[in-house]
Image 1 (cartoon, rainbow, N blue to C red):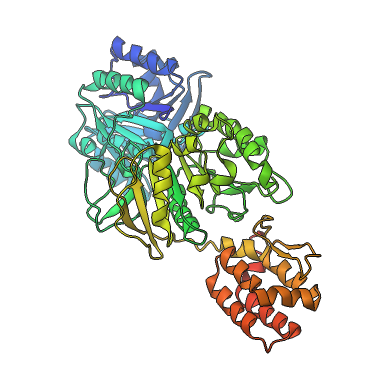
Image 2: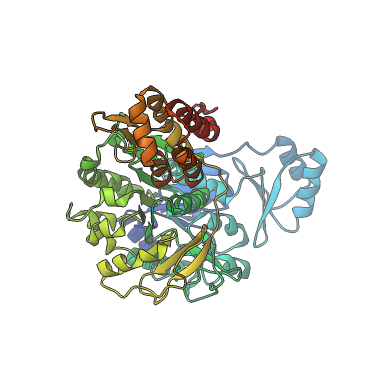
Length: 595
């Protein structure tokens, strides 16, 4: 279920001349029976609303006074969401004999042309109050109080965010709360300015339009809305991936005149694939940064500790090299709409990860069933968690997430049933053009034509499954300097297959260095024969290049390896100096308390 909450304006939307048709009340009952939360958002004062409408019990929350008051119909509790009107202002307006004049818990309400008198009183009293207009009505409220702020308070109490909500309105004061929601709907009688900015305009006016949109939501969650790469839904929410000279407006609408290429936030089943060091994590991090900035929730499964500093300032990492994440921790974090999470699986042995992940998926689906979150499930090193011939239910379970992203070096080593779900494939790195054929084979479709054989740094190829050609895109870089790889390599715990192993010339040793600082420490302590054995074989530069993806440092160390004039002590010192010159800062304690 995509839209968990349906929010409605009252006058001009549900009601005509203050009354709601019985057929519209029946539609509201159908919406409530579909297990969606209903929220009424109105400029009316609560007492006035209760006099004209006796079906408030259909709603989970009522936002009255244009965002100033929150009412809970089940308990009949009401909560002002800001300070009461200043007595001096109320007295001044009463003295001016303004009619009508309503004074609520937070709002002062009148009509034009009395707005000039109100403005003069606010200025003379030195108040920071705002005037909000609605078809001749004038609402006087504290700054920042509007239908949007009230709706956010209601959604927060219900454990939902605007990304799980659809709102319906008709007037000028509805702009704010429609913008908060994933989908904004204007009924046919709405003012033109609202129609121009909303995502859907109903054919019916007022209650008939409400009935129309409720039936569409119940039927298919508005999946028939035009969408972009991989998904459907309002294009205004699509997340920037990069830019392409080939881009331009099309039926799906993911691109604009600047050549922007965007991914829909819902309905995407994507894979980012390419060789180690090719830029997969760069693409993933940049996209997730913008996804989280837009308020979506992501859960990233991180088997290698690559994201031990999180995926954004508001994300939380659970699990570490000694302890796997628990279901209670996962659920507690995903219950919070704005909280994204990294699940660190370093404590789970590689051989056990497929079984662990199979057990994890149903746990991750529990919050999905309640709140449709996380919006994105991201699976790093997907070939480890989802190899062929594992659990047959994995593909079925993954289909129930709003959007999924698999990241892998080996697309051919991912369960074909899971690959069969994909609707978007992104190739990165010098060999990025090679990833499409194994995916197309699993999907039983022809691979796309490719505009380029090799990719430069910062470039990617994106294929929308079913299209004939992949598109060459320049990645829009992220703005956050993460340094997560450097910190992991300096002080983190790399997996056994990516650690450096000091074996020695006779393979008698079995010393594991799971980060660079430990590599230097062990390197200083092993005997000369062992150190020189690995040095002359070029093992140090190969490890740093192939596993740490640091070709610059690898080249410098390769120079040391080839300099036969250096003995064990001198070469050790030189390697140590090269490593610490680049990674000492990453190994220093994080000023905010991280590793």
